Image 1 (cartoon, rainbow, N blue to C red):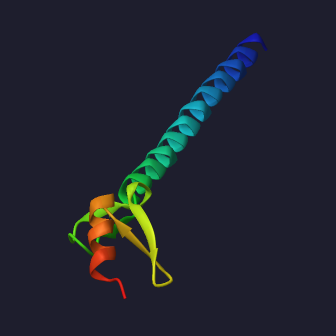
Image 2 (cartoon, rainbow, N blue to C red):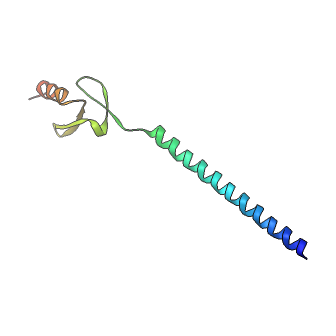
Image 3 (cartoon, rainbow, N blue to C red):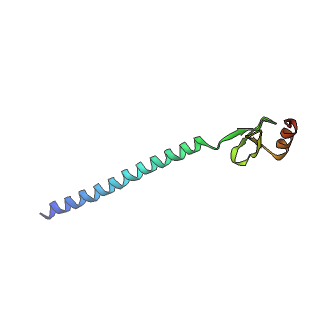
Length: 87
């Protein structure tokens, strides 16, 4: 009887340990998958129409010209573009 009880307890401990290892592995796999997809997405880039360089949208200088939002890499490019397109 005691032998059966010891075997049952040992089986339960092994089962719990394997369950914990599998849960951790699945959690790490999904976390790595989320990090990878975030890294691939990156930041949105916009094209500066004046100097033709790409700028991260969050850092771009934005002006409204003729009712449309236009993004620039700097205030200097925005000023030159506005000077050329004044009507």
